[in-house]
Length: 85
Image: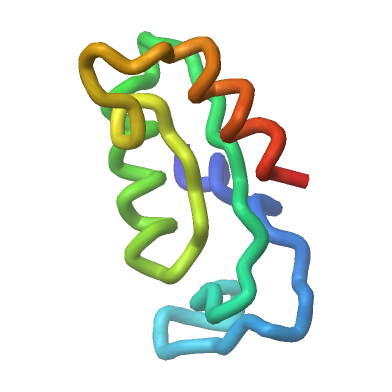
């Protein structure tokens, strides 16, 4: 499971290295939005990963964090996908 995050971000020159090691990067301003899709059985992992990515400055959309009760979830998902490259 430790390699699951490998390759999530293509280097853009906007990242900064930090003390976590040579492959650890912090996403900085200008990060493009990313729609995060996952299998429900991996929900706990997805929440942890997206939390870590957001803490590093990534602009990530995850249904469990972005949708609120009563919203038209289908429209919200389509709009989120439209905002992501």
